[in-house]
Image 1 (cartoon, rainbow, N blue to C red):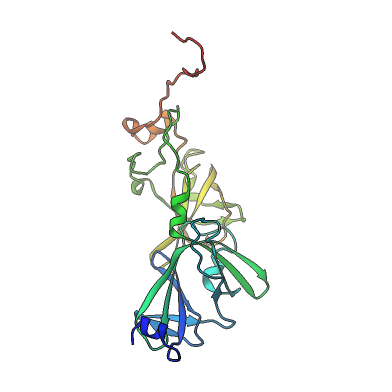
Image 2 (tube, rainbow, N blue to C red):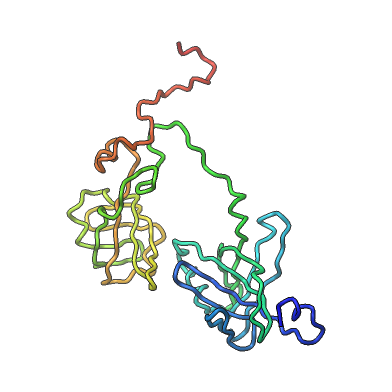
Length: 272
């Protein structure tokens, strides 16, 4: 029987929803059914207490179209948001099908925007549709003294792989990370860079570096999730100046205008 036939049936339909949360190679799958469901060779687990959403809306307004999913407080995907949120977006796809019918529809697709715990035993996952990101305002490239390019991006052109430092985590205090492997680098070398560590299935989570002094890195978002005694990958940062660009031997790709005048030609005065 097809999905449409089951959906239009008066008595034969047994509808259910499948929720697939995915971050790269990592995935968490749940179903609204009262038993585990195998879909496309993947097992969608039933949850004690169930999982449900507040409805699919398509008003054209991203803020009004946010979907809220009610689920048990201890599901795996919710734990990612207990502290600092994941460094990579967690996507959500919802499939609609009927029990014992392989035919299905993708009825919703988007990403997780946040999680809250309104009750001790329940969580509420807020998700936005994919087109919501298209409503966001983009940044325009401006004339400015500092370079507008982020280190390692295509406009910058610097390869990050040779700059990576593998460091053993020797100390964590909730805000800072300590490793002797960083002492040989000048203070500030890793400021505005980032630290990343493996979380399984070839995926890495990361934190930005607010400050680097000696063997100590102060991290944006804290050190939650970083394994003490484990190995992290540390990448340097850039303060977008000409001097720093020379450190990476990348001056031809510097995107700023270091000798830009401090006076605006549009202030109404005659500058000639």
